[in-house]
Every structure is written in C-alpha cells, then in structure tokens.
Image 1 (tube, rainbow, N blue to C red):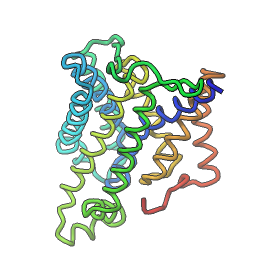
Image 2: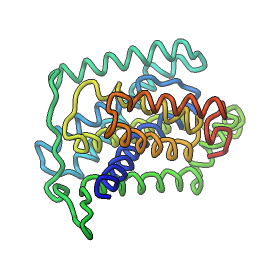
Image 3: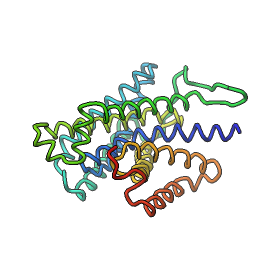
Image 4: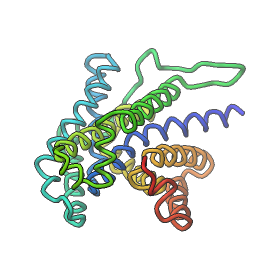
Length: 287
C-alpha cells in the first residue's frame, strides 16, 4: 500500500511538472501555429536559474520567481528576434527552433558547466509526513499543489478574462481579432512569454523533485511534453492537464517495475490514442 501511494504521488507530481511545460507548448501552437522545438530550453533555463538563485539566496520562492522571469524574458527575445520571422512556415519553424534548442543547451554548459548539479529542496520541504502508516514526501505534495494552483489560474485566465477571450478568439480566427483593432502581434508575444514562463517554472520545480539538474533535461522532458500535447489534443488546456497526469502516472508505475520501458510505454499510449482519435483526447474543443 505504501509503495502504491508513493508511486501515485510521484506520478501526479511528475505529471504536474510536465504539465507546466506542455500547457505553454500547446497554447503557443494553438494560437500562433508555431511548432516550437525550443520550448524545452525554457524548461532547462528555468531549472538552472532557479537552482542558481536558490543556492545564493536560500529563498526558494525568489528562485521560482527568478526562473519564471528568466523564461518569460528569454521567450520574448526569441519570439521577437527570430521566431516571428518564420510565422506560417512550419519547416522553417522546426529547423530554427531545433537550432535554438541546441544553442541554448550549449549556453547552459558555458555558464554552469557540462556536469550534473545537485538541486536540493528548501529546508521546509525536506522530509516527509506520515499519516496512518502512509509516508508522503513533502516536496511531491508541494509540486502537486503548485501544479493545481497554476492550472486553475491558467484556466481562469483563459475563460474569465478579456485576455483569455482574445487568446481563444485568436486561436479560432486571428485575422478577425486583428480586424477588431486588437494588435495580435502583442497578443502573440504575451502568449509566448506566458508559455515560456510556465515552462521555466516547471524546470525550477522539477530540479528538486529529481534532486539534480543536467544540460540534457530540457530535451528529455520536451519529448514527454510533445507526447502530452499530442495525446491530449493540440491547443487544448484540459487535454494538456489530462495528458500530463496520464504520462506522469504511467511513467512512475512502469519506471518502478520496468525502468527501461517507461518512455516506450508513453509513446505507445500516444500511438493508441491517435489510432482511436487522431485529434487527441480533447482535440477540437474550445479549451
């Protein structure tokens, strides 16, 4: 029973961290039609900036805020200087963003070195609680709470605010939004910064969850994010959440029994979903 609870909480916590990476990827594609293969770089930089700031200030919440800010700024710079120049050209987007992913990964090595770094949780989140013989890891529960709060905040942003209405309208018909006098370019930049900031937050949270960070973690988790987005449905917020939880739970369970098959099983899940519903579980919906 204790093993089951640990696998469950680990799967949900990992799923929430992947959700933070995947939801931005899904929204950016849904609104802007950009196949962003550099999205994992925001996750990577968020992990390193968060770990670096925490190591020097011992303030975990300042570390998370710094990671979000770094990711958002990086997103704005990349969107304005490079990605905006290949709107509507998917082949160029793939080549450009893959190149950016490699460059940003190498820059991490230049700044922090090529070796793995430890990423400890803050003191108040170390250890565990025990309830009726069931041990619950504090940091995993914290990750789940952060993921739920961010998911609720993004949902409210998309469904209850003017910006959310514009974003959803832009997904359906960007030309109409532009014709209404709304600068769709600014909306694109804001959405890109939001997605990049969420990915960076996911990286900053994922570091202490695994206990270490490395220059390859952006690319590794980006693959999981694409599985989540395709499984849940491109451009679907709910699909990203459900897909991330499925990937996290299945990955945790398979990693316990057959570690070598964890990624293959998630790819198999994506293939099965696409066979049954080519648009993904929630593809084609409004949110």
